[in-house]
Length: 149
Image (cartoon, rainbow, N blue to C red; front, side, top):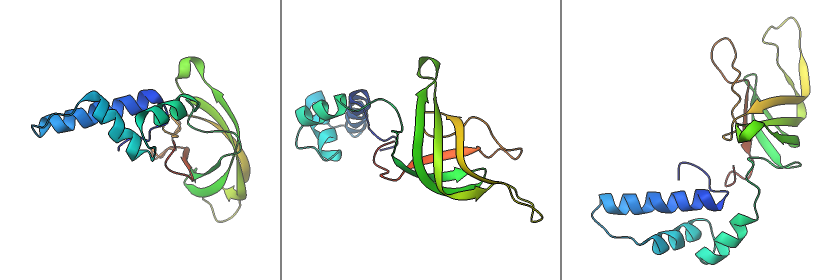
């Protein structure tokens, strides 16, 4: 699965992918059977259970208090989500993260610049649009329970 499924819309899109894959192999797969297959992929007993559970999950990539890891200004981190705010029209999210251990964001050996709490704007995929001068995103956030981003 290229994208993690967190909403009913994502699950239905995955079912369409399964049907297209089956069709490309010359096989027939009904939409209901594809939905049942997606439910099993997600660990649910059937589509009704998956649909009910997914409909109750918020359509945001991160939740306050959730454990995350990733890279901030090229440095690895682990921490917790301290705040999340949806940007206009769902174009992305402003997140505030609190790192377990401060991250040194200065690449020079002669001094340090430690950061423990940062705020940034990220896409739904957890990647900031802002980049360093060499093209690396300022922030990449990954849920520690990687099955849900």
